[in-house]
Amino acid sequence: MRKGMRLSRGDFVFDIVINALGVLIIVVMLYPLLFVLSASFSDPDMVLRGDVVLLPRGLTLAPYKMVFDNAAIWQSYRNTIFYTLVGTLINISLTILAAYPLSRKDMPCRRVFTLVIVFTMYFNGGLIPTYLLVRDLRMYNTVWAVMIPAAISTYNLIVARTFFESSIPNELYESAKLDGCSNIGMLFRIVLPLSSAIVAVLVLYYGVAHWNSYFSALVYLRNERLFPLQIVLRDILILGQTEQLGSNDVGMGEKIKMAEGIKYSVIVVSSAPILLLYPFLQKYFVKGVMIGAIKG
Image (cartoon, rainbow, N blue to C red; front, side, top):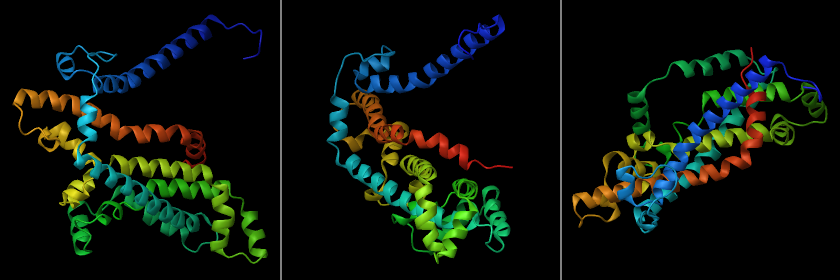
């Protein structure tokens, strides 16, 4: 709107409604985060009684001390970091290596390959055939069972392919080819330096997926030393297994209070790395999604 122009009554009411809805959405999304953070620092008795609404009550660090003193949580935390870093590296490498040739218009039968890949978004073998395949490949109860079956996301592959196809001019490929550059050289010298936005988006997508993943570990892992943090968090939140936090010698009421305090502190500890990482990638997020979106 130009400076000095007056809004009509309808536009003014529309702006008020939109701003009010925006504030409401922010409050609805922000309150659960603030509540979990406050509850993690509050007395478990007050949390159970419902006295904690927004600000901490009965400030205590005991749940965090129990979490940080527990070796099983630190072991699972290290496993999750490993799965996230190595798994994301595998995801990014394979996704880019698959998306780049599919984005080249001179690739033979690229539409056929794209159709076959997109087909897997709607139809797949299911859990039992995948389980049998992982077992027969001798990946069962190994770290690779968590990372390899989900090595490429079809959606992320299509987004990356569309980004390369719409953002890298074909003239660059022709110029590089005249200079004697190979296809691999074009990928590393032309495509990747111009694709920081989509790479950042893929890192965010894959990294968050690995960090939050628990189902693959639940199905394919039996060795507790390989469990990711989300399995431990699941046990605390759903199964209430506070015994693993050294609470075998206390009564049931005390266990309930300990579980109430510990579950919020574990949620904060497990979510903090992703929440801290997101602001650094946010500036690439919108650009990468908009440019890499599926078109037509």
